[in-house]
Length: 240
Image (tube, rainbow, N blue to C red; front, side, top):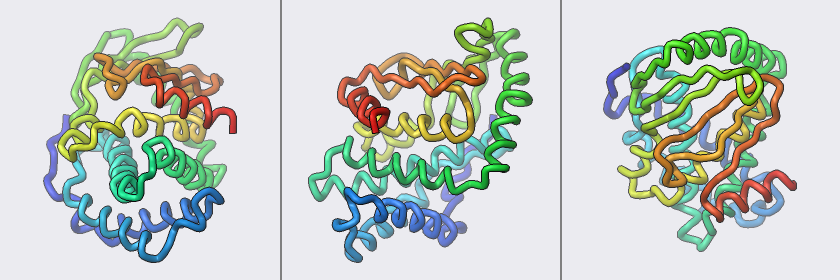
């Protein structure tokens, strides 16, 4: 299950700020935003993220590692959202910048490493999840609650229903739930980069009772949203 460690990341602030600076550089390189990224704005982004760092949730345990990493992505998006919204940037515009930066960051991972992660996902991780799905296991990992499903190999190979979401809890505490449906879209870049074959039609961020994650080896990422504005953003990203 794993217990939460308060203020875990303060001792790693320098490392986290360096990583966030790399995200800012990737945003700065985007043509649609290059002329707007002034030194003053850059400092504002760094300052905002520095304020958030002590409040990022961290849970002990090896199995919480993926969720902790995902919450770090959410924290970066939150910092960008808070700053750029002060300059009248719309949530969808902010997300497009974050999405493209995340894509570029994932693409910078060596191809051999991404290949290994793809193999691990379906050949090792997938086998474990199928086993839990057959047993209809339900469990709590950090501040996420999961129900495992075993697929038939046609519609999906294995699946997870998230009935509680740590991103929801974090953004609720930060009074920023309005960006949760966009934060959920980080899974597009992650699924594409690591070959998840993710199929998803709803999330807690959309106001649904659970997030329906389904995985199928060899499938293209197919994510839709029940929030109209977010669905438009998904379609725009797919057309680019």
